Length: 532
Image: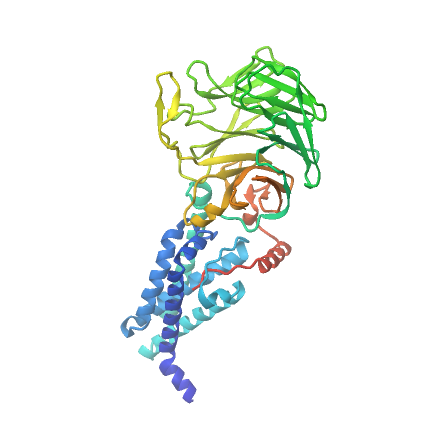
């Protein structure tokens, strides 16, 4: 009887003060590590697009509720507010556990030691305590009143708060993938570093990959082809002999597409071709076109970027050596904004697996997907917001254009494979720590068959040297960093999309067996949820 009397008398205040203490502790923990809290909140699959405003709002609401819970006149309203806030936290964790395998980490203090399930139970306990306190408070103030009103008000608080989280989740997903809000989604451990190979020098670049071999060119030794197996165990060099080398080359490049390798410069209108393992390369094109970028489409057909004679602007063209009219320009591909040269600068790459070409602008947030005949299939956007090139160009008296100020570079490199574009970004997104940008390169992954951002991942620098090139083949990513050729294993399903629904893996419906597997993986790489 004494215990029951004590509970009736003091239960509401005990719950109010205990909840106020929890909110004060949680808010102070967030404030003490606010940058980390905000950065990690930005990784949430539910709230990432609103990380900025939510990071401040949660702290303010927790402190206001903590104060009101200690004031007798405001206590009842604060209990309803606490019920709603704890319900929102609980619904957030429930959604993370059941509908996504992308797990952010935003805890602090003692609550950081709690796992996802423990945290869910912890929150549910406070939801129950707050609901019971509301009923006790109502009964104490109105002993003869029915509890119909407080029960329905409590249900409304739970429904509204959970609904707000749901709306934020749906809206956040839409903004990140469709509206180009510059908030990155970092994928959960998509890569596992397996092996590296010391090349000795840092002047190598990827020339191609096929048949279990990687082919490397060397800017300081342009007539050498370096072949290394994909297991990174053995390397061999072949020195190429050109059938005619009476030209003044500026930058002789190598490209390999079995069964041939190609040598070209572009400042000299010549293309050489030789069979792999044959040291002699024959001239197959001379005087057909000048160019500054070239992609091999087949043995006698190429996609190039060149300058039009009429206005010196960059344009994409097709060079088909089997046709009478070998060069065909496609002036509608690159869209001029300022000068038609620097503003349309970009990287031309091919998706051999799907027969596509992708041109990624350097100074704006767009990439163009084309088929092998250079017909535009889509103009798609990267997640940054630079839709117009931010460059300053001066036209010299000789008619040439020159940058008159440092340009605002958006994209530094890209490669396409299997309807995916791997883009080396040059811009820091919202809530990303500066330290990470000093120690890592960031790759953003996009679909090339529709407007969709898949996610991002880091490639760590080695000896303070960033990556210079990348190549994807099968379930491996190869990266050149300084003197090193590094092989990463791509986690199964990391960039997988559902062929029926055209969605990334974490959006796909899963059966019980798959859910169990995801749960087991989450347990292995467990991170903590947002603390209350």
